[in-house]
Length: 184
Image (cartoon, rainbow, N blue to C red; front, side, top):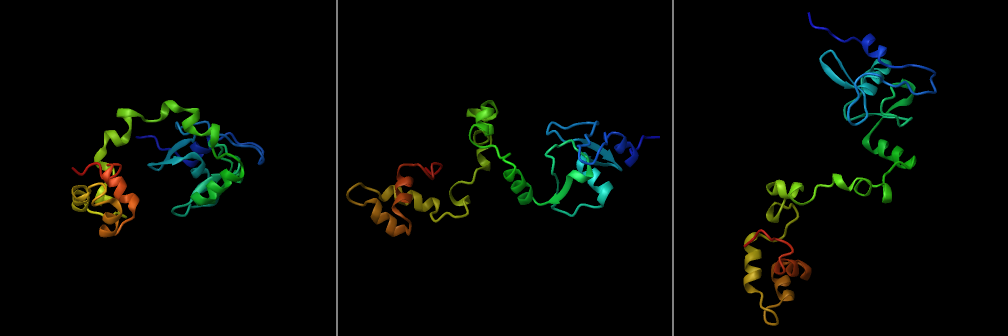
């Protein structure tokens, strides 16, 4: 007969104490720093399960946030419901937004995907280019026509901009192949 976890098994893995202190989860911890526990066939984040056991169901699209900012804390008095915006506002109010020298691209530059590891190089088909960009004004045929018609000092960028209903800088980018690079 397979072993099934119960709420009691979960609570045995929570090191409870005074209300003001964090109650760390002592079971399995994810790479993200959050505890994880399987109950009734469902994998839970430990703090979310602690909230449900203490207060009841969590509404859809709602986060269980920590007032203590400790991801392994399961003290129900430290947990509150909020939206992503609420959680971000709480983070910013506490000065935990990584910016400047604390930004991840500065503290861990080795994690940035560069060169052949960049997702744009690995999966160029996923990038929205040309007519797949929702705000495009030109078509691929327009781009070919602009490049065909452009002759410096005779059929210039200003005239092309008026003809195709775009601003001068769009024509300049098309001609210099800063945009629409994929169009031959």
